[in-house]
Image (cartoon, rainbow, N blue to C red; front, top):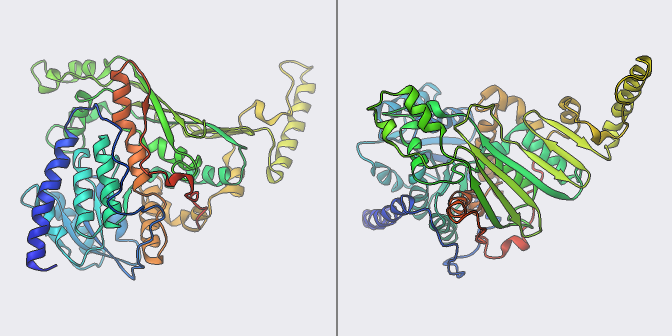
Length: 485
């Protein structure tokens, strides 16, 4: 990039970044309407030119970003060119990881909140990994694409409808990828259920359930740094589903959202917001800043989405109440269902590969029942009258080809059971082999849009809110996500 072009780029991104950050802090009431005319062309199925080596820059290596750096040090075909973070200690730790892995020392950028912009002027970076606080995701992604690089951003990609459209419009104008790194789509069971759904195991899909139920009150004690130092305040800004994508991403892929179906409208309701106030009163001195906060996000939010093809999806959010972790991961079809946490399956017509084991179990249960003198309920041969919790046989038959190929290595490298590593490996594989990514900017926008739209619905007595068609109609002809190998 020439010096004059670099100056022009910096001038333009300052304006874009300021607007993006302002919109991220604006009111949660968002109009879903936007001009249908694109400034570019659709990026549905976008394929970037093949890259022999994927050259990477990082913005943010405090927690999630540092894990990504470590994983990329174990993935072939990458070069880590530069790392940016305002925290010099976190920056130094990640640079040391890179050096100890045998890579050349990456350039470092720090010293101010805008230091990443200097990194974006580099011509030797192909993709940028963005792992910063939520309010910065959209402006940094926009600036990354404007600089001629592909943006890979942590979840959620956006927090307002305006930001969702900024991402879509910029991707279409620049013809650059903007992928929200929803790692749960690469979990072993999520991939297996996707494979099952594609093979028609559940019949015609009817309903799904997704959630992020994860007790995180302890993050309120992270005052000066770490996630809780900024995430806590989102509970004072809006009342809705603050973090929908972990559960919603996989269910959306099962249902071919944006690829044959799309979100149509939603309605949302929240419980009272009691838990964080009570936790603050119990865990902090009365004069502590945490006890002065007005927490408005209901402890439990439930959002119901209707799709254009008539399906329903329930999405829940609860990071406050004391309860076990769950993402639900439920999918219901005309032939049965899969449910997660714990993983279980119930089908009416069982595939032949599994049926023999079902028949043998029924005969055993029936013999035991008869031996007991016909006490208790008689065993039913109908397989859907009980949950099958033995996942081993289902995994043996229906594990996703991607997991079969890379699962052992993914589990060895770790990151939420291997899903983090597998996601990053797959991103590089697609870029090096000239294939479309598994998630695109339309997914990033649609999945993230649940945040502001759920808040709008809660504010409006749970009245329904339309979900914009971020694909501008392309969902009707887009091909479903393939069973990749």
